[in-house]
Image 1: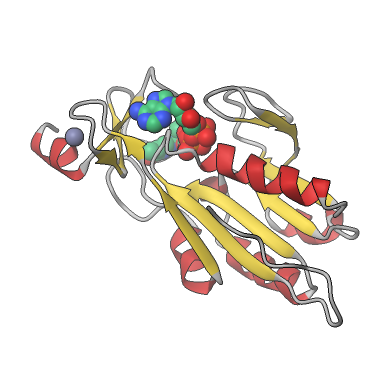
Image 2: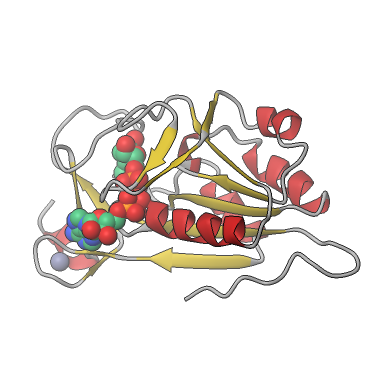
Length: 190
Ligand SMILES: Nc1ncnc2c1ncn2[C@@H]1O[C@H](COP(=O)(O)OP(=O)(O)O)[C@@H](O)[C@H]1O
Ligand SMILES: Cc1cn([C@H]2C[C@H](O)[C@@H](COP(=O)(O)O)O2)c(=O)[nH]c1=O
Ligand SMILES: [Zn+2]
């Protein structure tokens, strides 16, 4: 389990953490867990998600098991720089949907002394690197890659298989459209 470094002490330094993996791997649950612990430590926590992620709830970030915390939906990553004036810790969910400026925004926040925790899909349904996540992985101090359970064979899953729908990279959905699969089941049963 991730042990949070401390933000307290003489000169406060920020950093970037990325939590990535396939759908259903527990990214949102892990993000919520880290943010709840930061709140317990009396740190000022702010949470952002892309406005287009309206899958479960317009304002909360919600896990597949319906754990939730209040968040601010935003259109562009630059808005975080304006909104997050008081934050000690910033959480960003569904980061794969954000624009290419997100890694620079996270660097700026970390340089301001903020702990930035980003959760998102590392690969899209075609196993291509997804949006700004690869850049963030390159720049982050801490990376956690989580795995779901392959619905076909029970091994660990790191691919998100799209069962139906169109060819757009962005297509909101849940178990209706996607299932987590291991490498073998993703490539051999496509
Ligand atoms: N095939 C699966 N493998 C693992 N967890 C699953 C699976 N199907 C449903 N879940 C549920 O999804 C939860 C993780 O949800 P969530 O944190 O929202 O994941 P993510 O944000 O990575 O999509 C798990 O705790 C588990 O209860
Ligand atoms: C693989 C893939 C997923 N999406 C969408 C589907 C969901 O709405 C989110 C991922 O949510 P989760 O919290 O990680 O379960 O992303 C997409 O638009 N395109 C894809 O290729
Ligand atoms: Zn499998």
